[in-house]
Length: 311
Image (cartoon, rainbow, N blue to C red; front, side):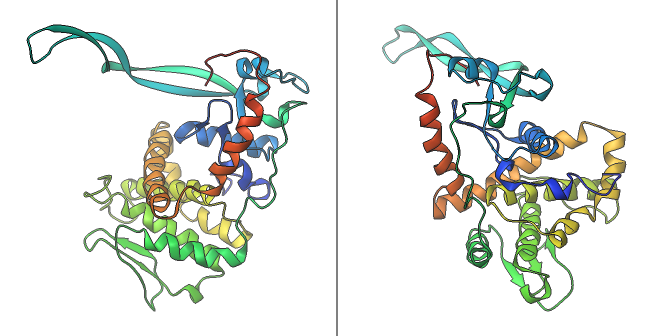
């Protein structure tokens, strides 16, 4: 951030920004997603698939050169456990049943995953056509607007903002933006703010401009927009990327005071993006990225030599 960016623009690859495990069918979210996104940038990965060492061994996958440093540490938080409880039925008979109960304190398990590009014989994944083309951006934008939970208005003025008091989003006209992708990126940012309304995810979104609380909410909206741009496979250009860096200086102060603020922001951003993408999928169906990866995952599973429980 002090260098003026979150992730190096030149190395961004949207294909790898939806990290998934083709064996367990897990789609990595929140802090794990951010870690794997950053690892994709650092190592130049284009493949969004990640597996554990145990899974790779069971599937007969061979490392190009086994390097533990290329494994990315992730975490899984456990909030419930299964317990046998006694319950009385209508006749007064006591029966034992297995139920999910909340833990008094959540537990965390750690695991390491490796990218598909680190293996010699990982089944190929066709990465062509996974990003939407320019002529599809306008159609996608209209569909996203259609699932907004608050009104969105384009007006001849110079600001884009979400008004919590009126629960509506105001945007400059589309022709005022550099391109359609820039308009869509701004739209997603403001829609992320709108998820904080008290009737939705109920975040602290009424904050004084320039305050740390204001910066915190901006970080959440911006991270949510980045997640959604990955979900919708929106292509980037230099101008679009630069629009994401305008709040960096204000974020740094909040993060230096509390390093965990970044992960709280990522968690809230994930919830915001899931809400918006979820509304989209309810109306228009699953995003194509998930349908494609589901098919390739089956091909990998056939190579497994024995059953195992891996993440």
